Image 1 (tube, rainbow, N blue to C red):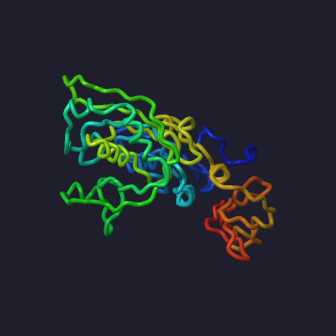
Image 2: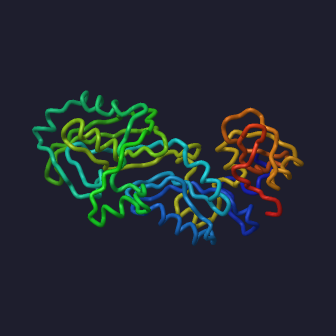
Image 3: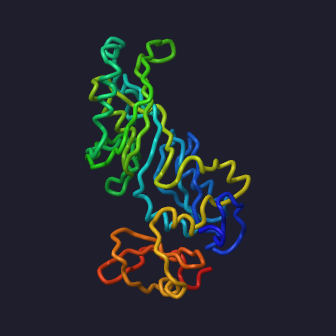
Length: 321
């Protein structure tokens, strides 16, 4: 599905119809910016208010942030449950109020306590977080409590303890373990580099915190880079400077839908029916899938419900060009 699509990956975004401007941009978020800051920048660059993102990244974090443009924002509402991949550095030896390096230190362990740990015990503590686990999100997460973000309440001095919830850690690899004993510019600690493949909603900060607690020395995150979000990879990500210099989509709406969902081929006539909100005959799938016409247009996302295949998102409604 390439030749007849409105945009090719990396092609400059021209002024055109709503559908021609619709799609996603895979952004390599820089450190120091919130996800909302990135959206605000993309609104200016792309010249539209219809911009949104999938999967918040903390200001200290970098890497893949998938940004929807025009009708791409509505598509992202259906792909937020994708798995994520991260590379991170964990410091064992102190706990912080934010579970990362940006928060005030709550506890700090002595060099003697840290020296009593072994690389084997550290690896085992991280390994305990692989699988289907219950995890307590960080108190400074974006989870809402009675309509307010948890991190907003923490900044106002509210003691926030969020309930545990189920998440899945498919793999967690420990790549490097170093004991930092030089306290000239820092406190003694173990520095551990890890890579994590997990379900959406998993907090790497929480893993750092919980491993530190299990080892009795405290832990927090010092670096985090998202390398993939579902089918979107860091290798295709653009910096904000690159998008500013040449505004463009990473994937058109058609390309993004085909990449994110299984495909069902339909006729042009069926495509017109779906565009008008009509349903098709089901094909026995349990998951959401994209319906694509011979002209290579992804018309909608459908889901089989009993005797009908009904739309959950119409990308190309009748009359929209």
